[in-house]
Image (spheres, rainbow, N blue to C red):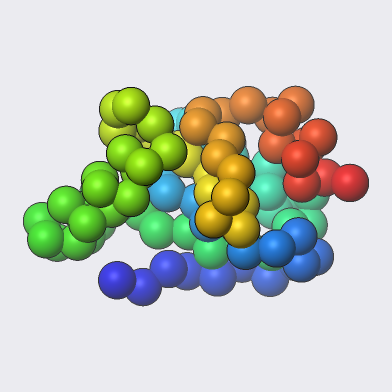
Length: 93
């Protein structure tokens, strides 16, 4: 499974799980880019069924249901939706 990297300021390991056609996922990508944050993302809907299953397991570690967008920061913190203020507060400083 390969994540796509977006260059920017290093704020730790920022992973974004997204759906390629989801407006909230697109807004999250744009916000991270506008903030100049380096991050890696994966569009889950474009993966094989086996890879999707692996991602679902990972997402369920952070939430009680599978939903996107989901940002995981340093494997320690999660922002489980498009929450611009929380994203700015957590990563925008």
